Every structure is written in structure tokens, then in C-alpha cells.
Image 1 (spheres, rainbow, N blue to C red):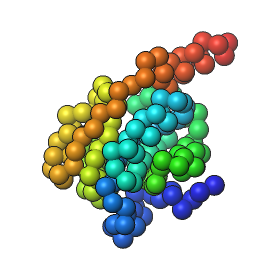
Image 2: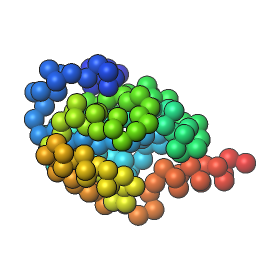
Image 3: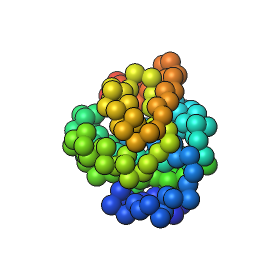
Image 4: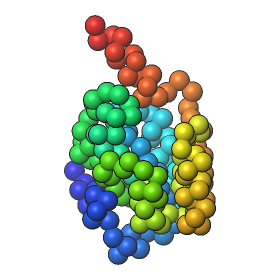
Length: 159
């Protein structure tokens, strides 16, 4: 377990990340970790020097994905922290407004915000990036690989 790479948003400080140059920020649930996630994280890391993952809480999965998490946030954080391409995992509380997300982005101060093609929050993330002088980079999705497809398959075959 690599706990030195896991921190809560409330414990995130400038002194902790100041040595991380050209920070790339990504966010997500990463609940059913698959090759598409790994590809996204590795390609995102290539946009800078340090990759920071903002990890959504279990409550987010329940509220917006409409199912129980397969893995709780601590297990998801540990999995991500073990990846060589990930420099820091920031465990988020349930953020309920775009302003709260923007405050998190301001705290991280990334050079790049990386997201997947088709991200439903592209407009808001672009606005946040512009306000702090960061670039937006979009990583294409790998066809036929997604947590949603895995979830559907698991639901169908579990009967």
C-alpha cells in the first residue's frame, strides 16, 4: 500500500504539491478499473510531469451512477496510488456545485486538465481551465471499453 500518494482534499496544501511541476489533473470514479482507465491515465501523464487524480467519493457513485460502488473509496485510492503514472490521489468529498469543483481546481493549480472525449462537463472544465491559465487536453475513448459496459455485462450474467 502506498499511502504517501493518497491525501484528502482538506489536507491538500500548496507545500505538498509545489514541487510537482507541470501538474496534470484528472478526475473520476475509477470504480471498475479497466484498460481504458489505464490508457487514459498514462496518456494524461504524458501531458505534463506530475499526474494528480481527483477521486470521486462513494456518495458520488450512488448519486450519479445510480448503483453501489464495487470498491469503496479507500480501495480505489490504493489501486490508483500503486500505478507508476499516478503521482497523487486526492480523495474528494461529495462536491455538489461547480464552484466547489473550481475551488478544488484552484487548490491543485494544474498546468493541464485532461479529460476523456465526450466528457459531459467539458464546458465547465474549459471555463475552470481558462480562469487559472491551464490547458484542456482530451484523450479519445477506446471503443467498447467502459465501466458502464462492464456493469451491464456483470448485471446480465449474475442471474
